[in-house]
Length: 125
Image (cartoon, rainbow, N blue to C red):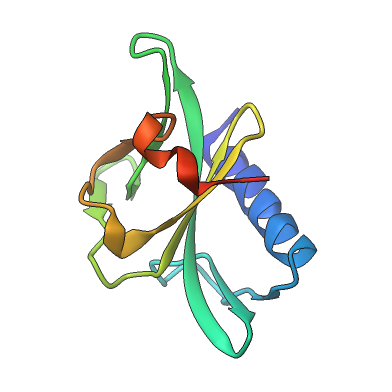
């Protein structure tokens, strides 16, 4: 599966999760923002970045990249997220598990091995 397809699957699951749990979901037009969704509940808005966590055989872990990557034939870019780029990180694992983490509470900015026990309390159903 291509990276964009994985991202689409993660975004669809995020939208479904938030809507099924009473949130209003807003989708920004275009992809120039560091967040993918805006959700609202109880009058509070939160910017959400959505990530797909694939299985890495060598590490035996699901990992989500905490950066954007792109380019063309002549150049390649990697951009790490800043502390204030979004409020929530929604991570969808290829096995269907979902996690929502407050971005400012994470002290890592490269990749996230989401199944570490310290993130267990952030899993949602």
